[in-house]
Length: 284
Image (cartoon, rainbow, N blue to C red):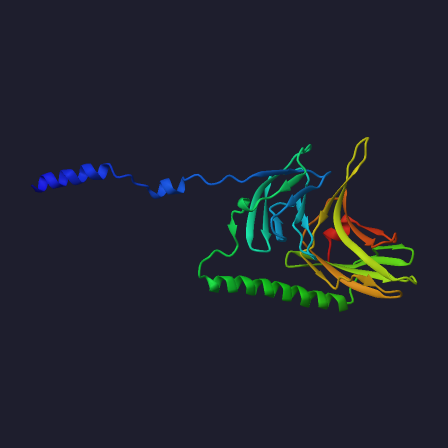
């Protein structure tokens, strides 16, 4: 009798479907979509919710969005190099992830991202308040550190060299470039020596590459600061202000240079200040 029961158990068990750990790990996952970009056109990405954060995995890709005012639009640019990834977080915590690749000729310039493309939420619905508080504490500490260090740099009497540009009474100069904790701090001074207030439209930072050959051309990739300090919206007549742009550490070759663009709102007193590679590569 025992022999018969044992035989039945073995036979029945052989017909019960089993899923091993190895099989679970081999379950197909949703493949990431690929977005192509180049250095001559802006690829526009429209997300279902305003963008709070956008990160690329390599320096040859730049993703920009409005950090001052929440918007659904983000712009992607790329220069030749290996493929990477783009991670975007909306203001509701929705996370979007894509493979990004450089392509000389691209056909698609606009992407309207549906909510269903989200791969998850940055705050999963689990009771992990300790971990969340730790992340928030680290973010708050980074902001606190940036503010304190920038405040110190504004009163520090140190100059890197003569980097200055002027136009119709508006003078912009880079007083100092300081390296700290894998970041570069650009101490910028803007003087309004005119009799008219200066309304700031934007202050942009980019890297310009000078192509050699018969047809010389320039390629420019804009860099988003990870932190700005004391950035004004207006500079009154006879007023001098100092501000700081914080960027991830980088270096450039002698055929490239950094460009700082100051643009006036509803005006033409615009400045483009060129910063040589020797200043970038040898900060204080």
